[in-house]
Image 1 (spheres, helix red, strand yellow):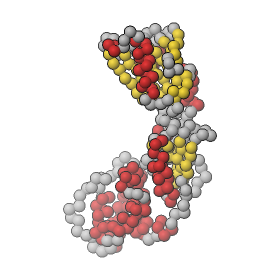
Image 2 (image 1 turned 90 degrees about the vertical axis):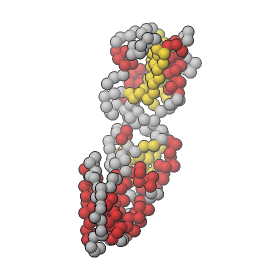
Image 3 (image 1 turned 45 degrees about the vertical axis):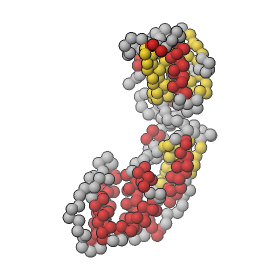
Image 4 (image 1 turned 135 degrees about the horizontal axis):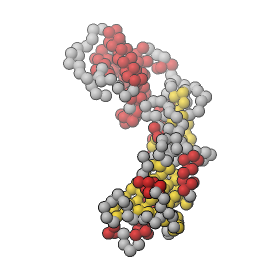
Length: 322
């Protein structure tokens, strides 16, 4: 679905000339009361639109929009509207054109810094020249991963525990540039992950892109290949993390911390019962693979309960929301 500003352009409004403001931004002026500027910021390419008499408002008014070029592999739209502002015409003063242009420029500068003017054609081509960011800030940290021990390329890693297409970073784990310390902590925690190798990337793709690779440590055989209870405890850790990695990191400092908690619970009949109560709830209906893992963990927990003796008294067991 195209925006109304794009619809106006398709109606064939002529362009009488251009005008530059004190900021250095060059505007194309249209006779039907709207102004368009194509510019490059530090975080991407932008289209600014300023309208003096928006057709979709009653009476005289104004509206300004800021749109950013998207990765053209993300869908049919070639831009993402990141900000807009509207108002009545009473505040426009004696120079409505300057008023709306300054409004649009101020709205843009709230999100990025002005680097230079570009043409409409360059704005359209920005999607082809800068793929893989999906309209997000290029300075964001994006998590990539590949199978442990693999020589394949790293791919964007989603919060649901799997990789996705190179051009699908919109679905990858990402944080703003101010959270670099959190990114480094995450990578440190994943150094012993038995399934994945991780790295984080930030900046425009190319020679200036920053990359931080997680140190790969050997997986401890005493834990991953240990007793039945130890393997079960680790599988519970992995399931809890893959179900909601954000909540997991909020509650636990590391996987090892939750593993120790599980081992303490699984060492007693009462503790095993508590873990069974937790998993014996509603199915994970949004991910069939996670649901299969939940059922497998539940089956092994019940086998461990039977092995430890008669089941503990849990006649009032209910469904616990996860």
